[in-house]
Length: 102
Ligand SMILES: [Ca+2]
Figure 1 (tube, rainbow, N blue to C red):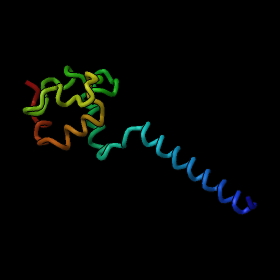
Figure 2: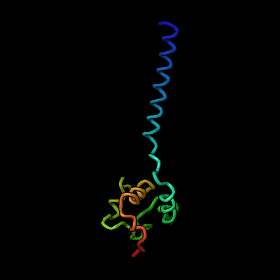
Figure 3: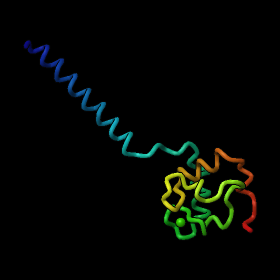
Figure 4: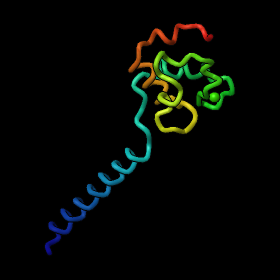
């Protein structure tokens, strides 16, 4: 194998390693929020214990109409993270946010 061929093979292996590393990083980290400003503002406003997640008590009955708690908790973890809150904010009628708690 010529020196040029070895260099090309080395470059190809390096590019493949970079592509694999980028794919692994994409799979291991959650996608960024589409609307981080309003989502995180609302999350922090409702997150009374400051753990970065919303539980049912912190929502104080503000669940959107027809969307009981379990349907908002997309991963079934028992709390809403920023991603789940953003989905609730953007995929439903946003006027549910304006209602006073019961
Ligand atoms: Ca919380």
